[in-house]
Length: 228
Image (cartoon, rainbow, N blue to C red; front, top):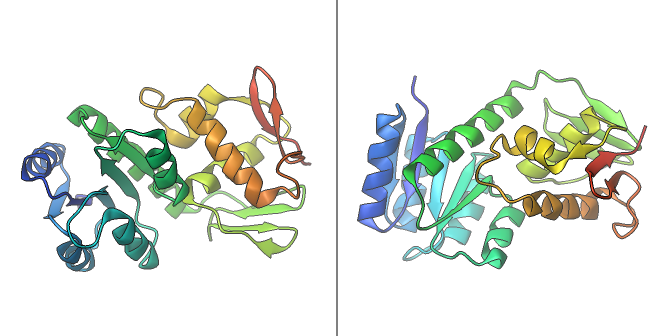
């Protein structure tokens, strides 16, 4: 059974090019040009992944993203002509699985689609045991996180980052290693992306994010989960 992708894009040339490329790669493809049709198509097609343009007529991409998230944890790759870092950070902070700015190469989009689907499949498998250290509990099976017994909401990427660092508790991980393991894509990502996600994660699991005790920086090398 092919995996199905919903493309939400109001530019016909972009939408058609994406659809053709992804179909050639063996994916089932569904398309919508506006927010209302996107919601209907999302419900009908039940896609494995959504490629979502942020600048849409009617409901914009931000509103659609929130609507999709209310219906489940379907991976979303945001697509936009905005290249400003603030927009990219905002999308990732909302919990998007990835972010691509126009103009882009089809090769890049296919690589990112496969990367996000692989990561989602790993989360769904839930084969890894529960991780516990320094008052933090991570359950890959249920995708739940507890800090000192209290539930904490993490984005899918934050969850993967925390789980990776905890699996290697006490060992320094370089930014390159983190990108390869958590993003599974070294070619298209800036290492600052790791720093941004670490900062967000600290805000959620550290009692004092300014003086972190769980995720610590090893200057000039990378990060490690210091709890035991």
